[in-house]
Image (tube, rainbow, N blue to C red; front, side, top):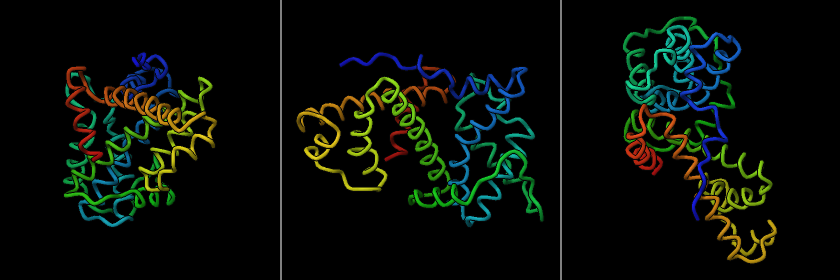
Length: 241
């Protein structure tokens, strides 16, 4: 089954957010900064945790990095499509920030606050990694996957096929996150209104293919040129394991 392109449904990409930062609309600039921060802070936190910082230090440094480098120095405003991947831009800036950073009694926190609930979530999904860069890469890749799954869910709900998403979530997503074991297809077919387990299995595969297509689009938003997409997709899939 050939999937139609889905990028027309999702006009707000990471690069369009960066374009918004150069515009004259204050509200759009503020919204773009907030969305970009939400996309990328978990990877920064993961890098800091794996590099040896405790939870409090990692949270403080993450907030300081976004306040001092991302916001005050306009890190994303300086991003250029022809100069490399956003992942590399963020990680390089973080490493330079840590070289120059010294602990202060009161770190700036304007523009971004990480809640205790968010920290608890990051700790709950943290996985062993060889080193800090591997932790950053895995959490970066997971953030892209999370964005793709949200878009996929929105797609199926908006087109009146919410049961397809609910089936896929129960069979594939929640078990992958360790929230539950995968239910039997016969049980899921009955619960979500599919005639047979075979019909349910087919629906799961269709949604999975859609999710992978959307993931490819999300990854494509982070690379400067389309020729880098296949390489970055392999990187993401490897990082996700």
